[in-house]
Image (cartoon, rainbow, N blue to C red):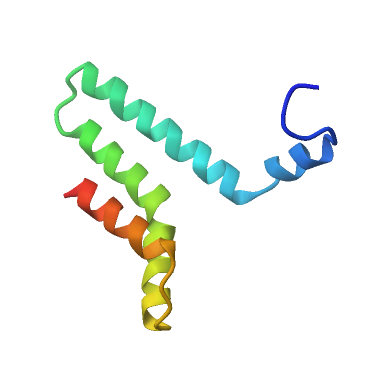
Length: 88
């Protein structure tokens, strides 16, 4: 058996989750940004990369803000700082 789980239902459950498709779409946007950048399409690759950043990093930043409002610290705040710093 190739893969992590012997039971195929685990994979079926994975493909039914919204997070899987969000991640796949974000990865496709990143790949598209690289292809567009290589072919010199002006500002379009940067716009596509920012869309990927919002799709993939947005939920983490929102959860970090919620944690700060509840006065709870977790890894989301650290990851949010890294996302914002890399974007800047």
